[in-house]
Length: 550
Image 1 (tube, helix red, strand yellow):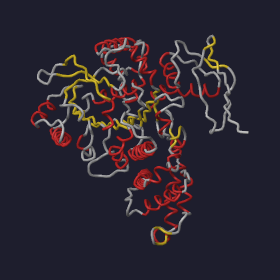
Image 2 (image 1 turned 60 degrees about the vertical axis):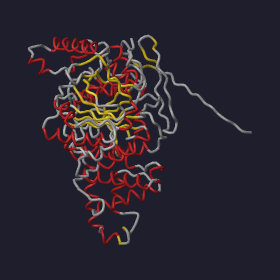
Image 3 (image 1 turned 45 degrees about the horizontal axis):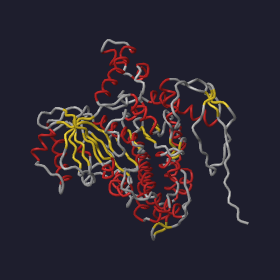
């Protein structure tokens, strides 16, 4: 049964709260998805319900078949793959918190029954059910990527040094920003805090990328190391290269990069899917994807490096798209602390600021969340259209948010500071004040029950267990061979969903010929597989279309 909120372009995020009584009303909060093209920010302390609101918005995007790239520094967004249409206790057992069960004096089986019942009742209270969860799984492919690790789907960052699209090269500002972000991020990974104007390391690497990319030449880390030792130019500006950066010193930089490349831990950055934003947003068959990049396992320098490269890649992809007024894609970051500070200029700040300024014209929305409002560059967020304010920890946090909110309200639905202060001071758990420039006045609301099971941050082992069936199913479909072990329950459903297939009641194996490995330029398409008994049959076919002029 579909409800009134199940409309394309509408996000069902909660119900309105009466400001006077603080009681929840029956009025639904239906958020227009295109409002996110003017971007949004979620601010709230730990326990405010900030992550639940973010996950609810991502679920709604998936329901509307809007692709998402989600950056997950804490590990909470991985819960988006814990969706159980049958709401069976057996589905919850692998993911319930053993410590919580023990504290309540319950074994895992009993606690799982309790959690399944809790989720069933919670969903029903918010006019949702298992059927809506099933549609959520059908509408989008969910994947967890773990850069630098093989726990989830690995990501190769070496392709990030490929020459950008011609549109970016021809756009002087965009080209300069792309080079600066890439070089700053790479040097940051080496522990070098380089100034783009004064640092000779930054100037040399920027000149190498500029020289190669203008010619359309791709670079990997090995080629970059060679170019450092033997640059394709002899001058930097008007001065001789040897005078500014002697070969002996360049060799030391090359050795640092080579040490990074030779490090066993860096192998995880070299394997996996290329950082192709188009492929991260859509499957080859055109199904939207919700790609979660879990970076909780990385060091601070590695996180900064990857986030910078990812956002730069998003910028490059975005500038190749035609303009639109609807929400084409959503970029979400669950904790922006340290990546968008008000004073410092880390490598991630430039591409993030550019996205906030330019993404609207391309239908790309940015949604940033943080529990530390003093760490946000509010000048950069000056054009942010939607603010979700949750419970705050300190008076300093509240004062900072009030100041920023007043600035954001200039020329729109401005209300007295005293009223804003009163509303924010009285916020409870899962209650938010929403300021949306597209609405007549700020709105107080409480978030709906999410469809995903909120198990808390998943460990690397849990991510591996969750993604292993998806990896096995990928290999099985590609090779045309049976899996070593059958999949069942959540594993089978997750694996088939990730491959863009309908979930089967019982796991099936693959039989039939081995898939031929074809050259990359030959595109391959797949139709929905059909069952023959208990076997999944793979039948390759060739369709040719020719035009002959005689």
